[in-house]
Image 1 (cartoon, rainbow, N blue to C red):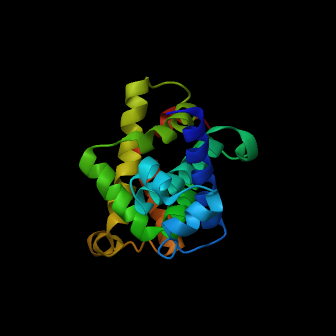
Image 2 (image 1 turned 90 degrees about the vertical axis):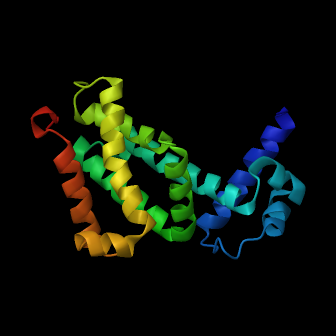
Length: 194
C-alpha cells in the first residue's frame, strides 16, 4: 500500500468515526456520503474495506480499541483500583457496542466463527496490572478470553441470554451486576492488587 493509499484509508476511517460520533445512524450512512466527506471516490472505500459494513466494523473497532487503550494506561483512571477499572472498561465497551448493536452482533459472530480472539488482547494490560504481574502472557490471554467471550456470546442474542440467565443486558444495573460477577469469579482475589 502506498503512502497515499494509507493516507486515504486513514482519512476514510477518521471521517467515518466522526460521523458515527455525531450520532449518524449507521444504517442510513451511505458509501457515497462517506466518500464525499472523505474526499475520495466510492471505489476506494470498497477497495480498502470491501463494503460499507467492513468500513463501519473497522471504525467501530477502532473506537473500542481506543477506549480499551485509554483504560489500560493510568490516565484518568489512576484513582480506581485495577479491578474496578476493568469492570468500568467492560461496561463502557458494552455501552459503545450497544449504540451499534446490529453491526456489533454481526462482527462478533464473524470473529467467533473465524476464531479471531484479538479483541481480548486489549484486556491483557489491565489484567497484568490487576494480577501484579503474577501471570505469564499465556495465562493473561486465557483469562482475557474467559472474560470477553461470555460478554460477546451474550451480546449476540441478549433475549436468549435473558432466557438462560434471567439477566437483561439492556438494563444497566443488571449488566453491571453480570460484569462484576464475571470479573470477580475469574480473578483470584488473593492475587489482585488492592
